[in-house]
Image (cartoon, rainbow, N blue to C red; front, side, top):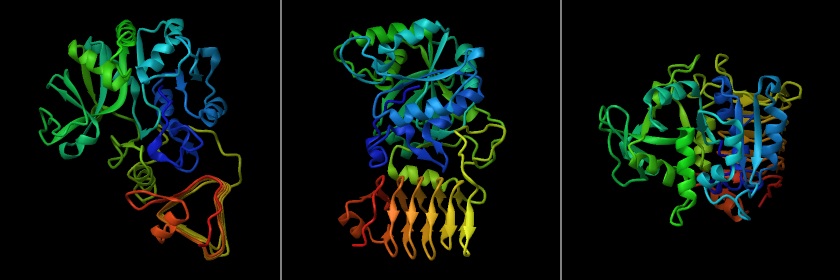
Length: 398
């Protein structure tokens, strides 16, 4: 699993943590969704390649993802080790190349390479079966998106038999699908390889001084040029317990706006992404706190309120509250995401905002109400109008 991303577009949420370690959905981290997909699918020998500000990610994996070692299962964080010389990872392909010992030690027939920071459910074993059945060396997961929106993705141009003709990076005029000209395949950044072919490709890439050493930019196009790559249609993946509304849901939460929108997908009566699927659960560390408490007519509508929260006379609407949050009387939280330990004082207002851990909003303060005032106080305001306050900040009144 590739988990070394810096996540610059999620600043300031990634100021102090790697992107896969960013909290999500109240009690989870982003990486929990992909790890849950692998574990639920029976793929339980996972090396997580880390690099950027990885302490909280390493700690979360070590405390949460303890597999049965007696059965040979594990999820282990692997930091950059400089096994190929005194340099850090130069790209996602170089990260795997520098960690080649992980492959040679296990000696698998097939290697699953997934990113660590998207929100979705997927039975990865079905993609593995499709890869084996194809007889090809490389399989790329693709999701159907409207063609007029595909220019922001890596786009897969494939034949009716799913064999990839070309792999295009953010093309101005994305190719349509053979069976649906108004849709295109966007790469999900998830790959499966036959071991020997991947090793050969990584070694050749390492020797190429012109390469960016990137999986999507260099390795995949190489397999495509050899006629050895196919697309796996994500819409063909069947996950137990999926609802009509969240089937084939996939969200890239690489920006503040996408991260906020993905949270809003969770909180409606009939959620666009359903966290309450017992047939394909999303696993994480169980929060050791008492249940949420509502006192002094505190309320929450269309919201997720995590353990340890105290809603003391505050009103919450269409929001996600992580553990150990305290809202005092007359406070108002609307369409917002509050991470652990946030304190909101009497009469304060938080609207269309994301508050990182341990932010304090004093009595009468406002966040997300006046964007010019938010910017003047040094807070981030996204292009979609979401205000973000960084970890541990005490919101000023002016």
